[in-house]
Length: 344
Image 1 (cartoon, rainbow, N blue to C red):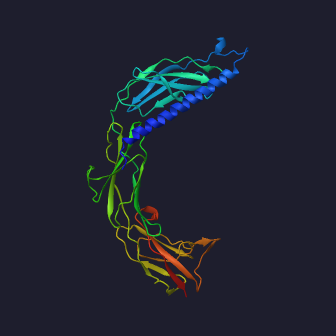
Image 2 (image 1 turned 60 degrees about the horizontal axis):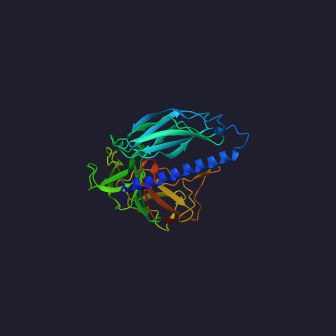
Image 3 (image 1 turned 135 degrees about the vertical axis):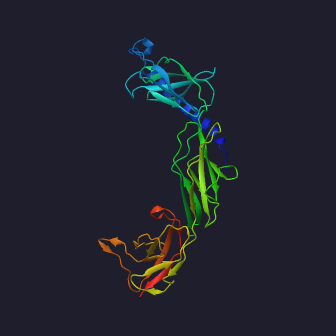
């Protein structure tokens, strides 16, 4: 399990890449401008037609680990590139990003440090403007993240695919100082998240739990964590169970049966619905369209093609299997081994 604090180091790495890209782009535009200067130039070297600096830079919002800025445009939208400069404490201001918009959100900042900003305009014909006014802000860590929402747990058990797991996903949190999520697991519905129940820490809103037992119901809670160590309230509790494989009862393997057979299988605790799949090969060529059922039997219904329902042909061998589900809509959980039957 990778500690969430490792995310902080990765964030700094990507910020350095961003900064290098900004400086490179600025240098290219500067070279382009120099190439255009000649005796007929009316650019800033001649003192005429100087690019205006951005106007009225202000701090729109200071949040947990973030500062939002906006300013007045220097020209028509989309024609002028703005370079955002930032200084930390008494340090020198450096370019941190560029945008064609008149706003910028600086995120993943350190808490309780003073950040000072100014913005310059830049275009290929007039070069870089004078700086705007300066503003400053100090991000704090006042709030814990919100609880993750839309959490789902979906179990799978398939011997053919060698799959036995429970997949969790949820909506991504939007906090600027978010560092990741914690997943807690228990075998009882009512439990309080603690280190005893901590299953994993992840950076993204998804987790695959492969350390499960078939037939055991697992309950999960997800929380969000920020860089200051504040943890959100808990999500709703979700659960699922990897079902045992359905056992096929009739028709018996290799047995002759009617052209509209009735299929039966054993019941499964926790199963919400079942679907029978009939194929022309052991693992392909589905020809059935049998509705979901909550029982343990179903009669054959052929798939409709060209306006006609497919029928089972006398003397031909077919295969069938049962898909068990714990979710609405018959989402696949466990799948029986296929069995063959022959139409008399």
